[in-house]
Image (cartoon, rainbow, N blue to C red; front, side, top):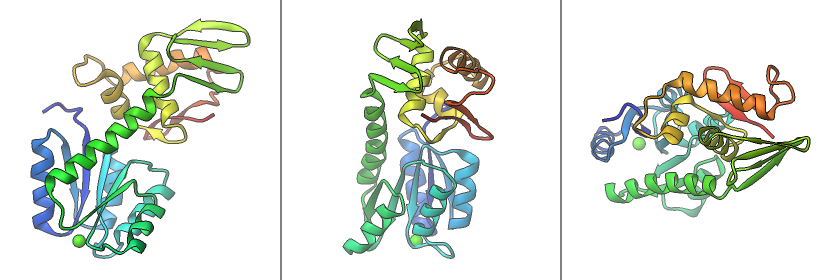
Length: 230
Ligand code: CA
């Protein structure tokens, strides 16, 4: 399996379900990390920068709602799919209110859950693909033409610079890990490493920032990666 497979963190205290999810997701090519309670889930979410989190609501100690709120408070915007045994409308609303992206009611089929995981990815990719132009400060980016206009001057972007910038813009306000950038921009067959990303960010800053050494738009999120702010 590729080291850069999409990473899923599963937080679930029931061993049978946890193992079932680990096996089923692993078979689909996902790299799976597990946690058996909320505290451990939070820790692993910060450490492993997963692409998707599957979070059970009923957990010992912190419950799934609390974990989801804590993730969002810490600025971790990773899509969360909640597993709930409850079918009451209130519980679903509460899950979505705490920042979850989707929920699956137990008992669920593995096929359904995997379809939800894929759907989360698809929505992100679609959101990204819809961005054709974007303006901020005195900069206008045309992603289709791969150009940046700044103070009346048009500067060409390389394809990789365009893709990195589009990914960061589509996830603006969120820290995007270098691993995510590698997986999403370079894909799974690449000879690139995280240094390559840093070099592209340096180039992008020179093209879009007023002062590339004191960037205001492409920020370094220490220990996390990069974050675009408007
Ligand atoms: Ca549980």
